[in-house]
Image (cartoon, rainbow, N blue to C red; front, side, top):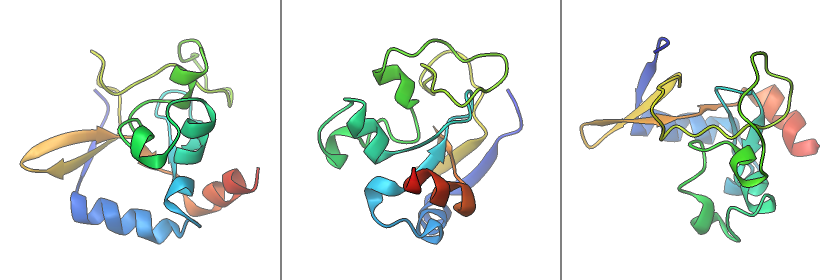
Length: 121
């Protein structure tokens, strides 16, 4: 496994707030395998669910490509989603949120300038 950064749930929430997204549907994460920026809105548009509550379990955990029949991650990120999820055998994520004494793997938050470009697309 790669170096994994562990943060508290409180820090994760603070980092989300610092992203300053227009709404919770626009909070943007980065898939660790394909590098695509994705939000709850992207998951809804891909058919993972119809509301934030329905897709929340996938947010920052499963790449949007899982819901669009995307293929496996490529050797080099190409800007297209993949079918990766953090619930599989391989542990290649870079972030874990510590809560209830357990480490919960998550996609990293997008850096603010990249997130702003994603929301504008």
